[in-house]
Image (tube, rainbow, N blue to C red; front, side):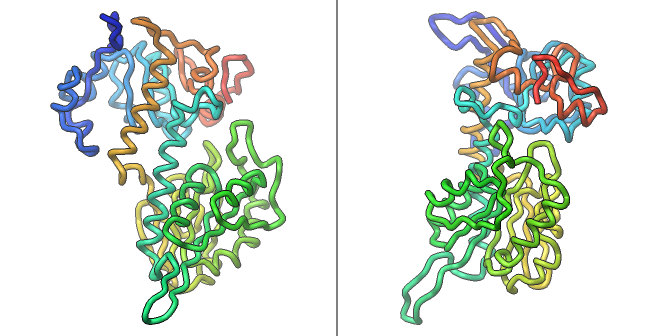
Length: 368
């Protein structure tokens, strides 16, 4: 709820659903101690709040009629949650998706996607170290020299870079691949080797800095070129994604069958279908002696710091749509405009419009 600020204080009254912070070690009384009101359920939150912040997209059926005119902020995955989007359109709920926050300097404080990717890359490297039947670092022991494990990271976005940094800290020999040649310098700066396959494309990056979706033919070529590097690795961490698109299949069954028994794949693109043909979301499967793990919510494994990061990102967006005790969604705002999925009973996000079978907007306020 918004309220007039007093004595220079923050102009927000906060309501929190009971138990919301337990996973991050924050009991109800911790919120009450700083002035928040704890309410029994999500319906009570919608009834009281002008701005509703959710970690994951809520079920469409949980958005009540009283939500009309409210603002919903969260990891909404709008292209994959079309029922929620339809409901928010019907009830004139404004939705701001963390995934759509633009990668511009002014929006960095609200970039929850990068925050959660940082967590995911870190945890993926730890999972790889746990599943690998070898030491990650080189060791000099009384039994002789232990050679370091070899790790391959596919996809050098925020998650990939954090996976590289973490695997390197653990002592592994690391190499990484990305279709975008501009990532080579970043890989080298972390002490890893950049895998050059000859298919790197300077035009493979969107204006927002993400990798563009590749054609079926391009993916097949990448699979063939990567196969020998995958086969040589003890652990493989895959992070390749294009926003709003299924994950590209970069490791097929035949390549898995070329890997060494005991090798492992951590596929953090599992929620979008996976970069490995054999990945099953939130399962660890064994194929031909190779373990393949497809986690879909790695930030939940580091709840304290993940929550602090996400909370800071959310507060940044809240500040963009509030001034004093006024709530204003300004679509000309260079952070809010691109982040806005629905507003005023209309879908403004063109990928979501496309998924809904709607005509692509050409207006200035539409976002890509």
